[in-house]
Length: 430
Length: 159
Image 1 (tube, rainbow over the protein chains, first blue to last red):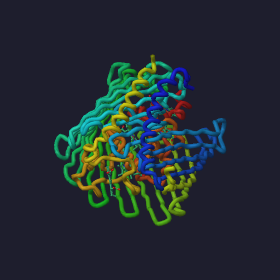
Image 2 (cartoon, each protein chain N blue to C red):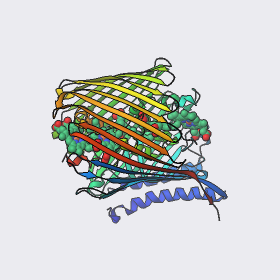
Image 3 (cartoon, rainbow over the protein chains, first blue to last red):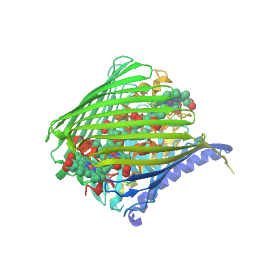
Image 4 (tube, rainbow over the protein chains, first blue to last red):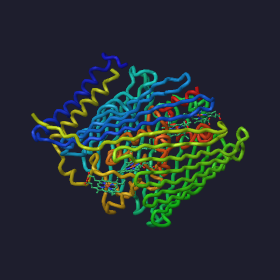
């Protein structure tokens, strides 16, 4: 846990500033006190699965996923929370129960100015280099027509494993833009784990439409601890015609700088190779054959510093009708090593009727070199859903398949989904 | 002092709030801006924004067509989200993102949404075998979701 003496003062200020903002927004609403409708949302999804792992242990986990949302549009407040609980009815030696409260936060955006957004609690921050789950506060303010600033700070959730003592995260993003043409942002992130500098990243993100029909976007991120670039990732999209869209992309990453803060041994420099560098680039073309039918051709090339290269290419087809979806994909991986040579195929369909939905999904892989004397792996899923009423539906899903680890496996999943969307009528005022 | 930065951050945020209440910035609100939950209806399939919005509309100073959820939107959504994730909250609740971007995951997304094969979801089917190959091809892509988080399951084999 956090030591109170360490953090009480700054946290007092942080939470104080939030309370202040809440107080201000409440006074807004008291002056207009009347019976009000507060849009509310609740959803619950319950799953019961049955499966066996490759050592023959059986499991029967029950999961409950919930979401709660409550809005006060008149003063720009929203409360949101989501999480899950697990109970395993049948397990060998593993923990029976588990849970995660992934999100629980308040958002405030003054009705007079939606260009200011303020969040507090456990929430996500997506800002340039940051894609973080934090316990803390964040704010974004577009203080002028074409520029703005985001700030966030708190305790990172990803470092919970080894305790939260002296864990901190903070950062910012400053951006400027040219209306309808370009946006560029600089972002900074600093994360300390147990008082030690754990991550320090700087990013430059870009978006631009240099010519009509051409859109470019990307990010370069820099690891200030190792002193090297984590990745350069850019993509360009060109609308050749109403029917044809081309997309090209380029990603270059340095393993030493990208994986310096890994908590999983497989990403450690000893395992993955400290001098590893990967460049991935490719192109895809989407062609709308006719109303609802689209096909995509794609090619990706991988080149490495320390091992053989690989190429991946294939095609996808997707059909969307009024109550039906169907599609398929065919892909080939062609690498310099035998392990990287295989063919992948997928076929799927969904039929949505009034009360019933059905879907089938078949995926198969053919390895050029067999593993455990097996070179064809597949997975077939069939799902049937019954819509009981507007709020409630139940489904049964069965997976069957095999791969070089399993000669045969079956997995069954039952689920029940409930959603409530309505308004809570509350008499506001005194 | 290690927590000094927080104090400044707190002061700064408070000042921001105060300033904003003084100047409600009426001029800014003229531009069509995004407020949470402004799509008062549910879309159930990947939307092409331009099917409903006029082509010269803009959201967040980007042409609305940029946000079209075309077949490879999955590989570009990150660029829009990192510049302004508020536009996503017009339609998506945060748990939509945490299905895939999570610190601690219960079920695989493809086990939760088995009835929607038309959706792009990470590693469908039984992935334990194929992951060895995919993981060596592009470990950077795995690192985003498993490098520092959501890797309790992996530790069983990758000590």
